Length: 334
View 1: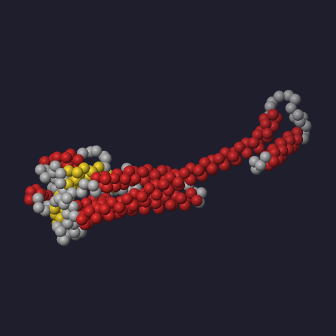
View 2 (view 1 turned 135 degrees about the horizontal axis):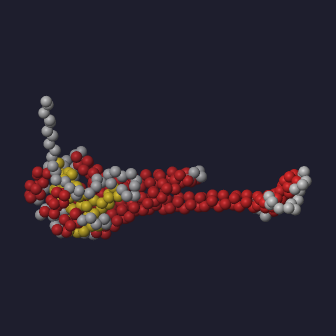
View 3 (view 1 turned 180 degrees about the vertical axis):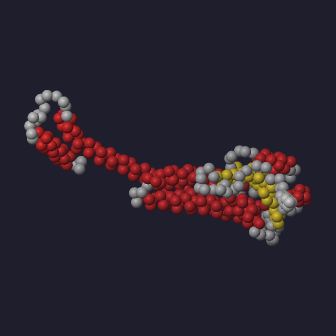
């Protein structure tokens, strides 16, 4: 009888990834066993990324002496609002990101919580997010990051790339719908356009909130340890975030105009169909009246005993139909 193979998995206590940031060199992965020792020295820059679904990650953050109490509260909070707070020698931020399984769904927008000081960046999330996962993969591929603020700059750059691609895809979707409307083929796109507009509205709130907290809070309270290069890179990325937000506003306005045009054309179609129905009703109403009269089962009806009664009745209906057509033509209804 063959013996079972024992497979041992490392337990990282909710730590998704950890890195030592090295100036002028690729970053180094940080094992869970070395986290406490590295943080105790306090002279090396570190990034730790946690999954808050794991209770042990929450416990570690709660008991971490390296973090200010206000930072612990904000990292572990469930408040869904984007914000930024200055804490001692750093800052704490809640910024908008997209879920990793993003399918252009209005409900696929998530939040990333970050603490940054001179030598430490801690980020937490409850569901996989796109931008922060892209940052993790870039570091595993050997990208050089010098400091936590430099790491924050790279994260903002990835967020801008991500939102820019989403806005571009939505603009192309709106353009396709506009082309369909011009071809009078717009019935199948009404629900899709409504979904796109909801997603645009959610993205606009996300981007505006990110831009507002970073511009109004972070840029006015930059830590003293932030270098001039890092400050200029922050400004560049915030300017790009503003440009992406403006592009989003244009797409949102275009989607609104497309929906108004769609509604207008639908209303025109309904009005045209009602007009045709009214004309048909008007034309056949006198004939219906005649057939109703001759269908009464009472005595004294004309032509009941006449062999040509049916022809006389049809002639009367034809004459009535002709008179109605002449009247409608004169009144320019036809």
